[in-house]
Image (cartoon, rainbow, N blue to C red):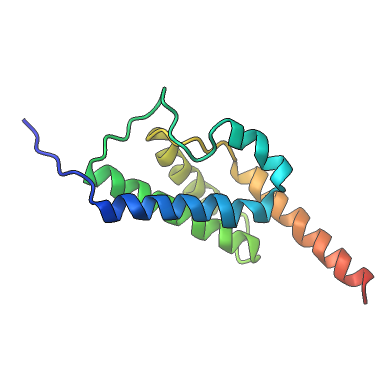
Amino acid sequence: MRIAFSATEEQENEIELLLADLRNELLPLYFSNDELEPYDNMHLLQFDSKRNLYNGIMAEAAAIMVALSVINHLLKDMYSGQLSGSEKEKRIFEQNVAIINYYGFFFPFTWDQLFNHSFEKVKSEETQSFLTI
């Protein structure tokens, strides 16, 4: 018999905050609302009822919080140009996406997709600032 502790209310709230930050603050840096809308209709960053392996256990909540935090930090650093796009960064991103997907969250974006969008957006902003000079 195994004893498991339930996730605390604070952990559940932190997961919700991390999800909201990822969806409402970070993904719009990479994609327009029109690009995100189809994913929202597919329940982006919400539990997939077919794959929901999250049982509300403290260790699971901790794993989800860490994974979401790492993804959020990587996306912030990527957008600000602090990441090189190395294989190590990609592997860290993919491992953490695998964790949240494992527990039933729908996050369909790949490293390459986000990195390329980030690069295109920075290049576009540089062109716009050059043209307005």
